[in-house]
Amino acid sequence: MSGYEAALAAFLAAPVSEGWRDLAVFRDGAAARACIRADAEVAAGHVVAPTPGRIFAALAATPFTGVRVVILGQDPYPTPGDANGLAFSYVGSPPLPRSLVNIYRELQDDLGAAGPVSGDLTAWAGQGVLLLNTALTVREGASKAGSHLALGWGAVTDAVIAGVSERRPHVVFLLWGNPAQAKRGLIDETRHLVLTSPHPSPLSARRGFFGSKPFSRANAWLEERGEKAIAW
Image (cartoon, rainbow, N blue to C red; front, side, top):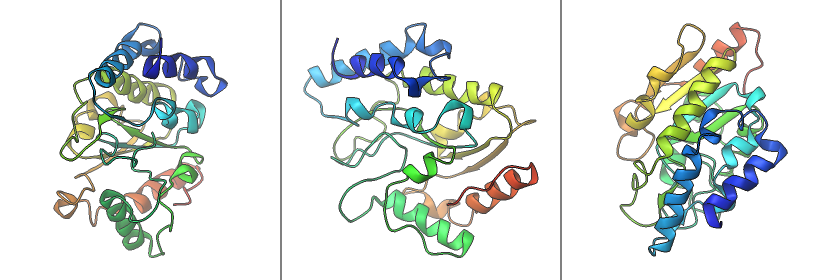
């Protein structure tokens, strides 16, 4: 066992997987099969992102019992070196990925404050913002976005979303882009708030992501239910 399959085993054995490891997808072999397919991609000569050690970074950074917001994107950044396992997050030298630039632009327009300087969204994850993609891996390289959407990650992310919907109270789901919005049926909207918009990528941000005010709307809904606002 090596690579992504080994990373799954390490995650499930670590204390940070508590709550997540109880989901059936981590016990019935579905998550393992997706990891095996990712390892096969590497064996075939493709460079896959993020690295195995970051594959479950989103779940590790946001404990199941602390999830208050889910930001759901498409898949990791395909640009070499950009993906780090947290959806939309970036740790590296400038420039920031363009999707993240657009997120920060909307954040500034929405809340009227200067956006973060760093691309690292770990601080959001630590407040209960699950930064999840519909696929947990991608082939690196130009025009490779979406290359692993059919690799088997759908079963994993479906289980995560459904599990949060079933077991957590008062969660805001921000579904950005069509692959994310396809998961809407997994969410109990009598208990949770779902906010949808186009993906913040340069190809679609002007079609409705800009002006959608997801950050202020999420905070207002949380505060109405006695929850602490997110310090975006």
